[in-house]
Image 1 (tube, rainbow, N blue to C red):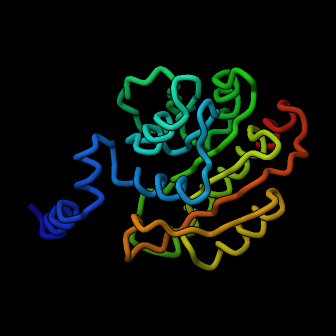
Image 2 (cartoon, helix red, strand yellow):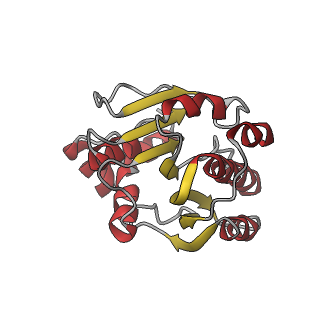
Length: 218
């Protein structure tokens, strides 16, 4: 086994959140990031309708479905497959989030046509070159904002991962134009060496056009 892979496996096994995820039956350690965000901002409620972008392997979807309960709905989207969670309130769409046809796929999965919360833990395939990875991740975060404009109800919320860097201030300014309040939050479960943080965008200001016009824009 190559040394780099061996070190990664050893580090993962020592990681407290990885161990807790295994003990509690969660799909990934990332569950604890959402858990910490939710406990701080109280975003998930019983019966809520949620869109989870970049859901695989399912840690965020799993936690959101638990909190929203059987009367809630989580529309989970990822280009990778999502192994069945055994929760009837989860609807999985296998698709690349950058696909322009994604909006027409999400729409029928939302019975009332809008979501209370959009979540995005999207990250690109990492190249190891920070400028490239940062640019690609910001593009994914902007895509999450665009999808939020289409599906969030007035007053709805968004949580989106951001790699901090040269392009992140412009993304934050864009988010501030769409939401009443923006908070930057770094969960304790984020790895110390990671540049990630999350924008918690509260109170969507709805001025969106018709669904057909929004879809064309995307």
